[in-house]
Length: 395
Ligand code: 13P
Image (cartoon, rainbow, N blue to C red):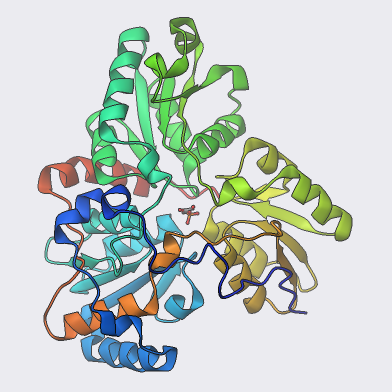
């Protein structure tokens, strides 16, 4: 039985294709290379875009690989050669050495990581440079370096910096240079295990919720995790609080995942007594604890797809993925926990018009919206990303 309880309406206010924040707020490193999409593309009807994308893809053949994150809309995912979570897509970017062009349908930090991990001859393209991540923008290198200086002055033990995948390349380079590592939602537990073997304390940025939920899975009590507010001196903590902390959590969050509440889970259980609840670990601690399971987008997809027919799933993650899982599992009941759904508005900026534009450019030998990370940043970020790729998937 196909039961998508909360359909995405075509004109909900979150679906912003063309009304964008100023570019320097969403994708600063790419600013100089930004080129506006020609107006003609924005008025092409869907079937015409499909026809032209198919023709460009066929013309490029094995020179091209299209990667699509699970949160992309169906009109994009249908063109992806591979789809996955941020961990799987990084592995794919590192392994697909034969393709000249990697068109990354995801967000800016994912395309940067693909550029760092791919071969020097490969070109990584992000169809819309304004597809950023508001959580990634919550930590910047100046604030993180200030925090690092304050922590290393206050705490005598070794501190291991960990950046979530959702961060700019210069932050990945920062952790690489300082003996740290990148993590994704799928390997955060393995990353914590590794990091606690290297030092007694961790600095985790930018998502406090993934950092806290992983700390709890790892048995670190709440009173040994402090939050660092970059707008306050010493992050808003006393020197004693910092010395007592095993994990310092950056004050960042994902607006899409903060919409989920423990109340929604209670309501779902009441309505469907047999339902299992699975959420993304970017949700709050209360939500993760009220759920039955939590894991990356790949985990959620796989877990539901492999469950027996007739299973009932309440899901706490982005709506394009939830609706796709529901459609691809017609023998199960799959619904979103949030009654007023909001897609990840920055992921949603990859519209088929942008995909068509960049592919047709490549057919003509014109590379638009290439993501290039400078060599020095890439060198250290690669250290941290390769450490991350060697970690096992735990969820
Ligand atoms: P995944 O690593 O689970 O795909 O999550 C990426 C992300 O950006 C979630 O908001």
